[in-house]
Image 1: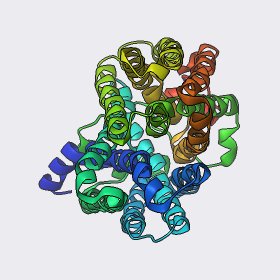
Image 2: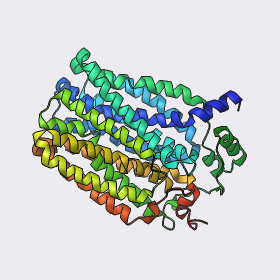
Image 3: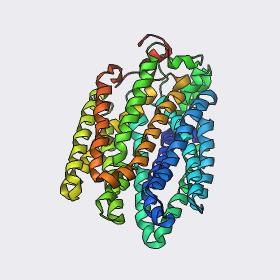
Image 4: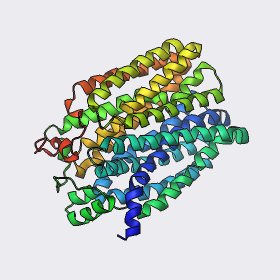
Length: 438
């Protein structure tokens, strides 16, 4: 590796890998804004809105499991290169569809492309993160990117609406291809995950990459024989169930502040522009919360951070339900608290825990399973949201908020989630059928 490439790798690897979440955030959240223009353009019914919105999440669920497994078999780098090619093509296709079913198909393929990237880049970030900064690198950084993508989608919707009216959705879908193409070019220069190489017995190659990244290799490197049974050995099945349930359940409730937000807020009758501004407010508050959380996620006990923030989100959800029909100061205040605490705690912690739980040889698959179930939970949320909001109004938020009560209980009964400052190989020791610190 030349000195010039080594400098590029050291400075840009984490950002370029995490930038996949910018694309994910933009694309999966843009549908919340785009559907406001799709409804009059295609005269969509409530069930069709749910179908169009859920299509990408279902596609993502498929991509997560299939390509999470393939990233464990063939490496992280090859998968997060291929996915961007598929994404660029599908984004352009979505911009030129002529009917609802073409759009559902294009959004499904886009979802598959996003699903290819998530477990791959997520595992990569976890594997290059020092234990003292793993929460920030594997949790806070991708979520900052994700929220930045979401904010960009809403800002573009607000900027393009006066120019293109009901056709705004075409531009929102098509423009997603530009940053994806740019990242595709830049990722050509990135290395393979050093921990993945070590697990495959390619130790010297891994050490060269550690040097290029300016990182100390882990004290206990593990060369693993890959077996699906490792996901069920010892206490592994409990950890798989724990991280999957926590991720999916908090995301089901948290979607109120993200992709389902415009669908629910519009039920108050405040209009398209005000709904977009409200959605933007939630994303900006979320980004501020993630940045603030990055300062503490590697310093305090993550387990108790998860418990208290989940309980706080539940309380804020009840506040939205009881004050929301008046669409006044109370709604705004509780909405801010709901979004802030979601992103300060469970929204980021779920990302960290869902890769710490698995050994390197199955990290992509394990993370992919957790994320797959999560995307299906979000798909269920956004499918139900327009119909429930139409029938019950904003009071439906109270039902979604109950998910955070369940999430808090999951964390309470899972002491292993206190992973702050623990070496990655030690956090997933049980999954390998080995002693926790052995």
